[in-house]
Amino acid sequence: MKAAKLFADVLRFLFLAFIVIISVVPLAWTLVSSFKTNEEIMASAFCLPATLNFENYILAFKYSPLGTYFFNTAVITAFCIGIGLILFSMSAYVLARFEFGGRNVMLSFLGLAMLVPTSALIFPIYNLMNRIGLYNSKAGLVLVYLAISMPAVLFVLRSYFLTIPREMEEAALIDGSGFFHTYFIIMLPLAKPAMATAAILIFLTSWNDFLYDLMLSSGNNARTVSVALSQFLSLFGIDFGQLFAASFVVVLPSIILYCLLQNKIESALLAGAVKG
Image (cartoon, rainbow, N blue to C red; front, top):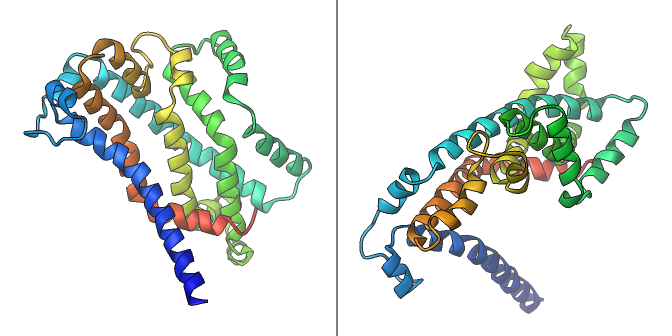
């Protein structure tokens, strides 16, 4: 029995170590390479830089519109998170707490929406954005990213609201609290872990998207950092140091946000795993 448990622990450790390695090593390699000169990178891909060379980061912003793309991405992502958290949390609360005609059908369609391949949405979304005059605009990208992230975010939030005891709302109702007061003052603070998870999902959708931004924007008006990386291949195709520097700058916000909200995300996913 002890031998079987030891063997299971070893397998679990090896599996977790493998996940950590494939997750951390590419990021660490990108960070180290971003401080190396082109000659050092060509000499050895895995050697340490002779000095911490920040010139790659300076040149990456100087000779490309990376700063503009960062601003565009930050604005689009901020609006997506702000609007999405308000609309999706209220919708999820209604889906979790109220019985109404067509609710189950609506939930079924939301589940099916997550199975639709991205390639099947390209032409309809492109055609719609052109018809309503939102092509090459930040507002158009905000609408697209909200629509894409909606099914997964609604399911996460709804599952968490189902774990909150109804007695909380009943007590508030007895005290004379109305619907909006109960939701904003009582329910929403209790759902902070789920809101953090929703924020991460919306952030990743809007920050990391490449296909829709490339398809729905032209010039620098609404282009985001994901498209900027593809342009680096043509601008600095032989300057790998600047390419690595730009790549690390692009992924860094996602890492920071996840580290800040990690505990809340884990608790939300665990709580929502038992109800749905």
